Length: 548
Image (cartoon, rainbow, N blue to C red):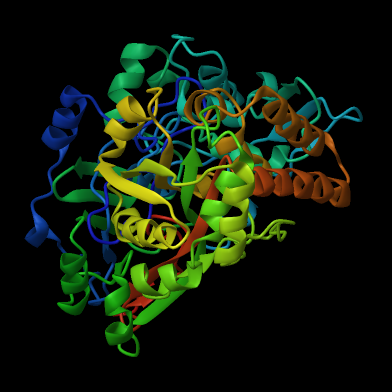
């Protein structure tokens, strides 16, 4: 799940946890025909085509911004994982409950009130907001809700389940009790139900009833959110406009919203400084100081991590002491200063320190060359040599050479092999010759609770079984702890169980972060009001307006 690229990003959130979820960067990339369809439906021009809409009194009613990625997936929220599509979908679609992009706090979206649970925790009921409509004017019904969940839980092609399926596997069924009441039956109690259902956005059943309809919907989405998508182009970006049928709490305060897209960091900075846009994401770290003062520059701690992943079934990496030694040998503060210009935090847990549920792990890999050497000696791993495979993520490419140099100090020789993520996860990692990978990942755009974040990398078949080949005993142990925590209604017990899981993955380090990055966003404080940056990819303007 790669994200937060600062120089040449390719917009996704990284490889997904489900057995059939796509690997490369977690993107279910559009087919050539679908990409062409998006390009053909786009009526926006190139970078110079941004238009500003004025009211009769001269007030600006348009927001323009530049994102750090280009469009590489469709918009169907059951499968969308790309940065651009996910950001757009937050404006176009609603869940029953949604997470605020900036604070990550849950709020009522299509739900009229908080979901209610039965005494045994196996049945949840949700009432829909009065008068909710999709952007085409059709009413949002409980049948649409049931359909939106069912098409993910029971897809037409079971061999290719939607991206979101792994996040709601605790749900047995969803039915419409009446036009405005949806009922959820769970396989087992799930205390995080109200927050977790935010991953499913509600779509009209009439527009997504079968595979053919869903394919068309992927390029021409219809939602109940404050904006509607007017056009999309993988070259120039997206144009959205106010949804006149929206009656929720996040009413659009501008008539149009333009999201330009470019992977070129200098182009984003030029857009802001030239006055073309009012906000940009992923400010290049080297430009932060020069933009401060004139612009509102926000820095937020992110979950996004650079991690090391090992083939845990291959000697000597089947010995955790070798894995630990390679972590202890890294001067993380120096790496962050050199590669990230200081915009990162050494990993002291699988969770980033900005996470509300952060707990420091029992094992923290502070820089300790002597300990690294001792661990290698204990493991009998002298004169260790291996290929360090890396993805072509911009940050990873800057970090990787520093890792190679650090390991020389403990007598380890690593040779770099950098390839696109699609090649790394599709060809390199599956082979028996694979040993060590440096890559990045960030599933936090979908949610920030430890259950979701830990299941991404440590649960299921794709990551722990097929990629880093972790032994069954540890996989089962982690799953058991997460399942028990998810079913507990006692917050203290949940945190205790999560801490046990966090300590295990830290101690074993089958796949474990070196550092967590920071996200830097810049906006023009003289032209934009009500904007706040997010701690993940994307720009969000749900309650933003123009000052001039």
